[in-house]
Length: 344
Ligand code: ATP
Ligand code: MG
Ligand code: FE
Image 1 (cartoon, protein in one colour):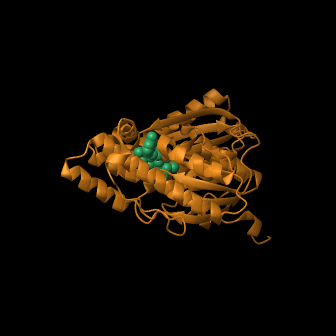
Image 2: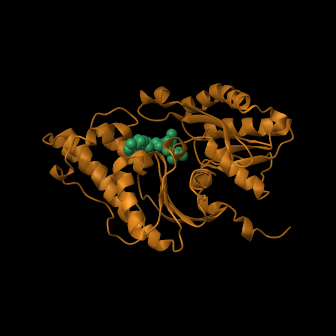
Image 3: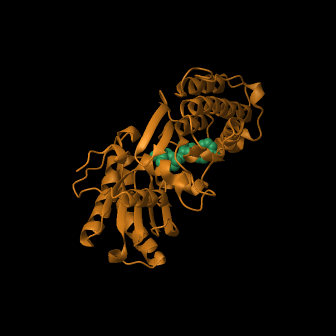
């Protein structure tokens, strides 16, 4: 039967029902952005309460639109980490309860694995994203290069030494007086600016490996803003150009560290940024690889990806017990590789 996916790791409450072949039957996302905007960031306790009040209605809605009753499901998949523990407990407990009451298999989904497997959703790419591929996860909470070698087999090649790239966009936007979350506002402001007018650093550019660092860039933006002489649009353009150049350079190094990769996959909210996308497309083209960016609604937090990760795991008979505890920290390289699991 169809698989229900639940996402509640940060500030998006989401539910989706997918057919066993991955066809999306129904999906819904409730974004809490407005609840948190006046605090300038996600407030964990508020987020957990909002998940609690919105999740039951969202699940009922997608089940109805998918035309499926709980005991007709083939399984329930709920994000169980990494993320804010309050929200994770709400979503995972709801999912387990539903699964237990209807004798369904339960899958505790790693949110990062769900992002990593998204490009394999049928119909997204002609032929589907075949393993191995290189994933660039560029979001508000994560910034990493991952070699996706198979289900459960992820090799983290590089990560940020300080801020995630979306976080850097949000901090720079805040310095420019833009509302939170600032990434999209900063991109709009940058469109009318000239990057060449404001020299900004490009941290780690040309350095070996594919780690990231954005705190120095943020400090430089703060200093330029404080001087008060530069046009905000020029600052925004220069910031975006720096990030795009750095991300492209890191991606180039990561591709060299992931021989055999069949595609460069870009995911996370920052994949929406035109400057970053263009720079990465150029890197992929030079490497003779397709650049794949799922549609934005599947790049930002959603439950379609969670249900899909559930389907991939159910196909491999990888289910989780009722006492699986949500994990605020759950690095991708700790996912048990199914192929290497000891024989029972
Ligand atoms: P995570 O998925 O890591 O748990 P998250 O929920 O913050 O964290 P996403 O929802 O994937 O991440 O993305 C949100 C981030 O993407 C924010 O930091 C936002 O500013 C940034 N972002 C969204 N659109 C753009 C854009 N056009 N340009 C730059 N940044 C953007
Ligand atoms: Mg979010
Ligand atoms: Fe995410």
